[in-house]
Amino acid sequence: MRVVVTTPTGNVGARVVRVLVQAGVRPVVLVRDPARLGEGVRGCVDAVVCDQGDAEAVVRATEGADALFWVDPPTGDEDPAAGYARMGASGARAVRENRIERTVFLSSGGAEFRSGAGEIDGLGRTEELLEEAVEGHGGAVVHLRCGYFFSNLFGMLDDLRAGVLRTTLPLDHAMPWVDPRDIGDVAAARLLSREWEGVSSQGVHGPEDLSFADAARVVGRATGREVRAERISEDALREALRGAGLGDKQVEDVVGMSSWMLEGRVPHDSRSLLTTTPTTLAAWAYGNLPGVL
Image 1: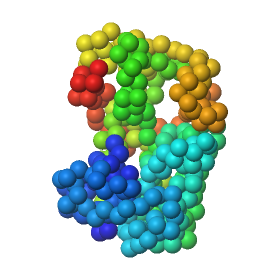
Image 2: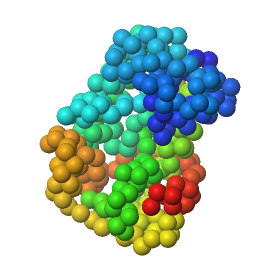
Image 3: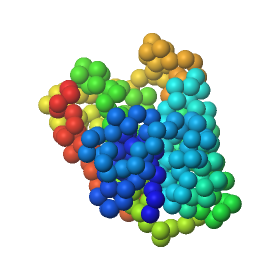
């Protein structure tokens, strides 16, 4: 089985690679800098230097692939959603031209709406492109519509050190939170299995829905700090993002990633046995946050 993995050094991609190797597969990994692969990983994979924005290079690197794990990497574009869609077009071209049998795409809850979800709209466009790509040869694609990554908390360390967890959502708004490692497990299982077909989606939701108030309590217990959730306005978030140097479209795409939930839209992939993964936020927080806070 020839399996190709993109973003193999990311939170999810690294887990996918590890599970595949442990299953006896030697994956092909597309990476810009092979030195970023751990020493133990380099001898277990075939690394191909590749920019995912270079469609020609992606097509060459995925030739002969049976299965593909595709992630749209951040591009730094002034229009982030368009940047994701541009990356998705490279993956879709490779799937179509190489007639790849199975594609697992790292998407997000909200992508199914196709518009109105900020950066996530770019993932929605990638879903469409991949669906079109498999139609011609009877291939299969599954969109993993994931919840809120636990690892997003690493981007909030300054606030957490100050004892606050900020959000534009109502503090009691519960939503799926998930460990990226569990997403990697689900992705790897799909890549290894041939027992699915067609176009489908699968939520990856963690073990329970959590509000930011819930998350603040969990983080506080794990770190021995007083942490409280605080709701801020979308305008306050915009001001903070502009202060960090983001352009207008970048700001609006970040704000839009949560504003669709404020509008009351509900993700299509509901919680079930299929979508529920095991790792709790508490287990992740105790293992990852005390050393950095």
